[in-house]
Length: 414
Image 1: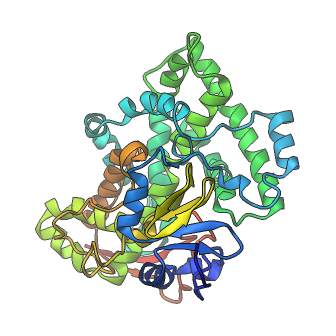
Image 2: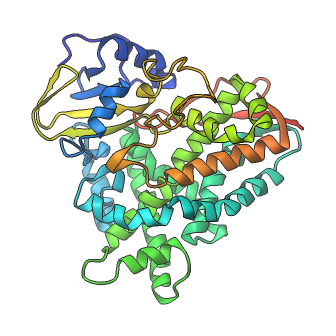
């Protein structure tokens, strides 16, 4: 247990969340396993220590619900909304342990193989270019609203088989799923989010019922087929898979990565010309974006037996927050860690998408969406700048994610 408080490292402080990297560096240097005062949460910030935890999933379990960590747990009013008006959400694949984790993962993995993503890459490219068709040849745009949010949302909606006309509702619904996991949401907003999630539950319940009668070649039909038989998914499981594992997980983090990637390239545009000269470096750019601005800054683990980690004694039940955003900038692993380097010997070494049992199921899809996004942008535009007079980019307060609220930019025609 940490013997002293390290100033400036309270990751529940929204001001520190705006740019946590100085705090991460200090923690890596002084206390790579550090109990954040007043929380009972141990921050793990060094790459090797995070990897040690991830590689022992039975000792360090993933079954932690961030919504229940606040004093008093999930408010009863929120529980009542789900029980009386909808269905209590189950744990997602990323926040569960075997056997439930194994059951869901075995269903999801075949849907997102590398081969399957190759097959749908033309679809992703078409959606990226369709969005750019609606942007000006040059001038100012708000990048999140115009491009980085709708791209992954439109892709996953297409794969699910959701009508195009319903996409306008998905932003509010998706935010309502993700915000309570931030650990920064107000009680009033958490109640509002519960009502929006219930609205979404009824929407997808109707679609699942329709697919049962009229199956198609889409992910909703795949979920329905996996619900058949005595060992099939029940309704609560089906809704959790569709809404959290597929839809929310399939768009929020990728939106964050594309947006952060644009900000990085505005700050350092040199990689754009490197990639134009050598398009094969695009994959390395994707990995560097994920490393430098990990969309999931941290994930929880629970210690399942007394142990020692990096010299720190941990009791059974202790909560760890693996700070991927810190580990992926560890100078011991990544020389000149604060910069994009398209020539790293192991560009995919980072932890942004997890490893082992909890490696992101949608990793290949996320990587392709980021690559398709910047391929399309580089083909149409010579460069990018922050819009004149724009305020400094701000991030949504969150202990979990790293999402820019807006990114007003200026496009320069090629």
